[in-house]
Length: 79
Image (cartoon, rainbow, N blue to C red):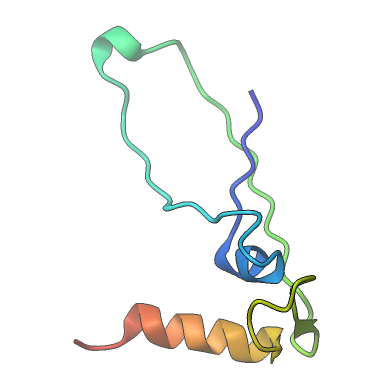
């Protein structure tokens, strides 16, 4: 099985056609265990000066750097 997790930037870039997912991991219950699992992570990020603009222009254009900064601020904002 191959799983591809889509991130928030690609979701915006695709005008929500490729939905991002909430990352979660849990240990399998004893009856669910199927042996060892292997994972290979590959992360790809747009260059910071790339304009993120979807094909239908659902969202206003933003640079990859500015979008990433917005997401970091939203994730770590005190509230």
